[in-house]
Image (cartoon, rainbow, N blue to C red; front, top):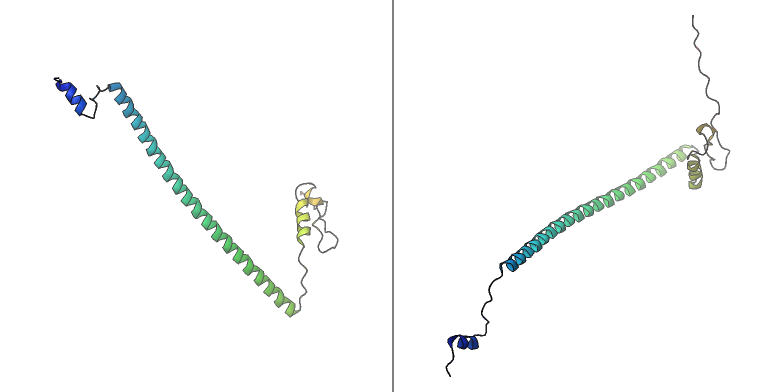
Length: 147
């Protein structure tokens, strides 16, 4: 039993002999690889852009919160100053009017929506008193005499 050399190699070798390389298949695989690499690259760029956008939004939100806190603090300070000024005027003997109620203010602002002409609009009630209306007639125009 004489074995041929090719048969012996095939029996001893665990690997199969290489098949001939198909050039079209390798080009197709390479092009697919390039497409995937480009997609990965563009995805990385999109991720970086999204991160920078997120950082900017986070910064704007932080600044808005800071501005709101400052406005709140300024309003509190203004209310304290107004109370102190009113207290000083009361001590000096001045009688201060009561502030308008929010419902009265909203009624006044609702009438400014253009339902009535401006000259017929009431200025609104103040603490239950009668309304003050603007005159309905325009002011007379001065006449110049020619000589």
